[in-house]
Length: 367
Image 1 (cartoon, rainbow, N blue to C red):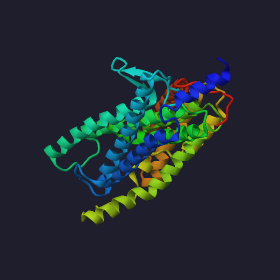
Image 2 (image 1 turned 90 degrees about the vertical axis):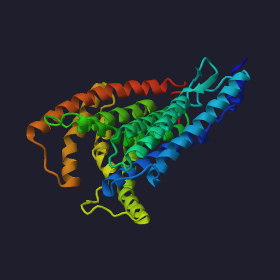
Image 3 (image 1 turned 180 degrees about the vertical axis):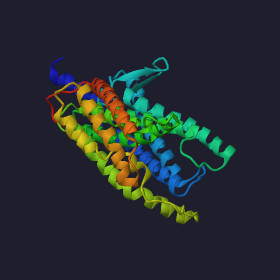
Image 4 (image 1 turned 120 degrees about the vertical axis):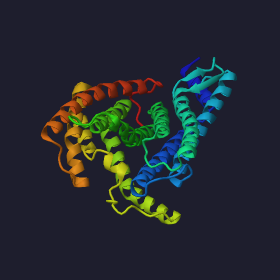
């Protein structure tokens, strides 16, 4: 079979399942809905307080996972049907297809991961409903079912990154990889809140978590694209999300409180909770990563970790008018942040390479 006939056969097989931006766009759109619901819900807890299971921010969280999960399920079913008809699935559709339940299903790996995240979200959602029925109002975000819900959404977001990274040879794949990595980075700022349970004294564990996740995802996104400007593109999209949510979060919480007849707390400072956790130094970090891209990832990661951990307390002073931590605590946090940044840089590069192996792509092709 000549190359022209082979390409035609591959193209015919690829049409067996949705191969373009539509199914991937639904997964990305679902993760965006979840991110909007999360920043709204956190601000609600901060400005208003308790909530129930059925609230508007929760609806955004649930619908986001539902949209991503249904889109993933549709693609898996269509890929399975195509496989049973003897057609090979083009890896551009969410990565290489893998057998599930003894090859009962053939699932593109990206959609499999996003679907697993959505399915686990459903289970944790049932637990959350039981939790609310048992304890009534939920005054904090760090309840056990909430932690499970946040981790489930994070898994779906990882699947979204995988889906678009598999199509990186196309323009929409590049844009989608940058967008999905940015959504994951922004969302991950909340998952590190669980580190508040660690002893806090000689070091700030949340700041270390923010540093690690920021460097990891930033370098993962850049590594998946393997082109100049990848890290800067992710940082720019994160900055745009931060700017939008800086306005949206307090506004949405206040409007919804007025609509439901609940008062806003008297001591509300007006600072949006989730956007203020995102490092404002991320653009500087991205520039440093771009300048050091020829050096080992552990070096650029260490520099990135140093910048974020050093600027974190300064950001708190700027945003919250807080006082600087003790000198010893600050220095130790920066040192540990640098070490974790180096580790995150190494892992981020590895994960980026793994994303590039989801599907073969022509390295010389433009997106």
